Amino acid sequence: MKLHLLSGGPIPTNAYLLTASGRGEAVLIDAPGGLWAEIEPILAREKCRLLELWITHGHWDHTQGGAEIVRATGAAVRAHPADRVLIENPGVMKAFAGLEFKLEPLVVDHWLEAGEQLAALGATAEVRCVPGHCAGNVLFYFKGQATAFVGDALFKGNIGRTDLPGGSFDVLARSIREQIYTLPDATKIYSGHGAPTTVGDEKTGNPFVRPE
Image (tube, rainbow, N blue to C red; front, side, top):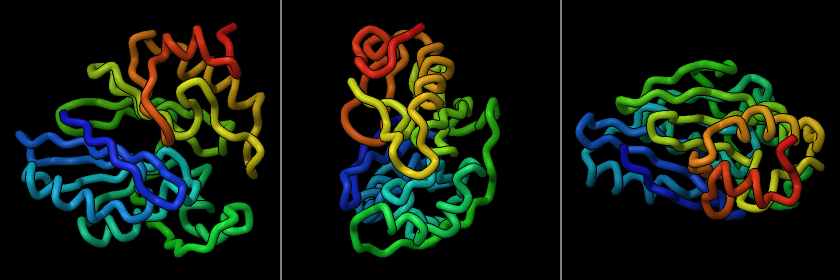
């Protein structure tokens, strides 16, 4: 499984294209605006077909490019139902986004559940719910690859905003302690914004949420 880190949208937002050229398959985690032009040549070069789009949470900067990508590839969309209104009616976010841009709804093919195991690219990802930044934030943990994609729950030296609708610092802190800090320390953390980090580094150095 090969990881391609991409960034797009008016607020630089990370997306992660996972490819397995030997299987001819790919999965995309999050879809900021304008990324299809970058994704298409990677898929062509590695002779992969995008099978699925996994959404870590429903905020517009993570979904803005999703409809275009789905039209181009037919990828099935997976997301958590707690963010259904944001994903299916993204216009509700314009009031607190502070920007003017085009937003299209996404049709979700499969609603995720906590503890669900997703088979992809010859590997397995565990779904963990990490609310607090918003109600539907999830992470995808690939145990075999010691890798977790956490959306906007946790960043390198920081945590997700909790001042947006559906946000709560107390809920987020509990999510981080119970769902992220319980992963092995060597687990690589890939966030929705910024550079990667590890569980161990955040447990010892993140000033916002300390392990209990």
